[in-house]
Image 1 (cartoon, helix red, strand yellow):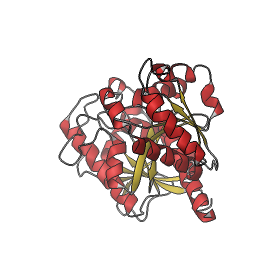
Image 2 (cartoon, helix red, strand yellow; image 1 turned 90 degrees about the horizontal axis):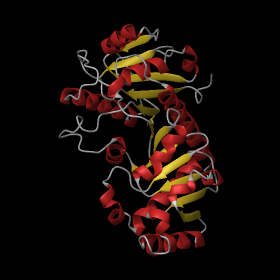
Image 3 (spheres, helix red, strand yellow; image 1 turned 135 degrees about the vertical axis):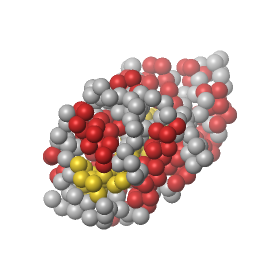
Image 4 (spheres, helix red, strand yellow; image 1 turned 180 degrees about the vertical axis):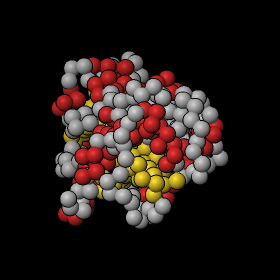
Length: 337
């Protein structure tokens, strides 16, 4: 196995009262995955061992003392907190949020120091994680502050890619948020990501409309005519293959997304509802535009099923493999440059 094909994947466990431990343990129960990854989780090894026993899993766990010398055939655990956290499945606890932050901070420090190659994050609870050190609506905004570059929330599978112009902001603020500069920046970030992260040299991108029916020629809002259409024309004249704005309501239903390399939605639910409808459990949340690769599953903490042993790890596994694919593609792209 060559060095480029086996990478060190760092893992933050998310909210310990959710399904994070379970989906991580299930992902690394299959020993074949160690042909491609040396996994390093940041939490507490006793928590992993206890959850493994409760779930009846066979995942091999190694308490890692020296991060520079991980075990290459086991799930390594760096002690991000000294004592095991007393897990209370499904409970919204500030202490659980504090432990999630500890895992995040340990993982991002390792990422920036080059001790891990990529980072996969298990789901956090957006309310109980709020603190003096975490005042963000989600991972994407947190990473935008912690890493170099400008972040783009990008939901991907092998056959469907949907990015967002605006992500975790209230719907009533979307129109005022979408300025020409911000939209242009998101389009440029998406183009660059498709090129360097997915190897698509001349990406073709669909832009969804802001208003219902893309405004119906000004009858249902003017922003599509006054903002999006002139901007897209300007970008087309510069060589970008951007098209739209397309009415969002029928775009995915009539399979129009299959004609493009990616779709850029104007706001969160406009993009994520069709993406999750078509790909739930298989999709990956990739934070594009940053200096390092971070992915996550396409779901949340799933408090309602935590501790029941029924959590599906498919999306977390997909996020792990997608991080590797992007990491290798970036190496290839930068080597060419």
